[in-house]
Amino acid sequence: MKYPASVAGVTDEQPSLDAVELGAYFALMEVAGLLRHAVDQQLLREAGDLSYVQFQLLTRLGLDSSTGSERMTDLADGVVYSRSGLTYQAGLLEKADLVARTPSANDEREVTVGITDAGRTLLATVLPGHTEVIGRHLFQPLTAEDAEALADLLAPVRDHMRSLPPRSAEPRYRR
Image 1: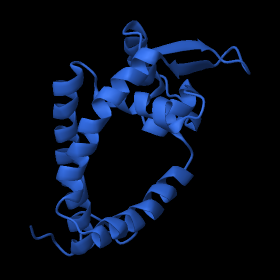
Image 2 (image 1 turned 90 degrees about the vertical axis):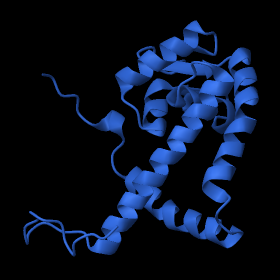
Image 3 (image 1 turned 90 degrees about the horizontal axis):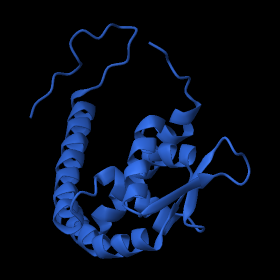
Image 4 (image 1 turned 180 degrees about the vertical axis):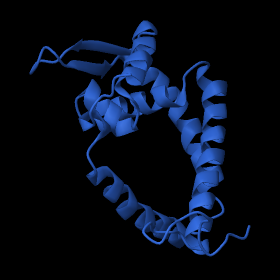
């Protein structure tokens, strides 16, 4: 797909994207969308009604957290999801006995979410298929050097974006 040298309607004061940058952006978004669809289909097949966000939460708790638990605010920032949306998703997971929510030991106004044994079992069931889908769709067409280059390219972008204030630090707007 060809893109104009700059985006129409962009003034001289606003930075514009060149054709290469636009192409890279749209390719990244298309790859992310296609990969997300493949993962969603795998989760539907192997875990029934487990959503991608719920899978992310279980993964963060079951694989990334040394204690198996995190504060709700940290989880929301980690999976880049709204606090209210995360509260809803955690409630669904709690009803399914995949997580347990408790008041934080440090601050009773905060809520901590912990993965249950049932959550760990479901994660162990779903994770092999998840890694197979990621391998087949994202890494199969790449060489080992390409995969390393991709990781090297995305890491500073991710780090830059993560260096901005987390969503939980943003002010809440009232309507």
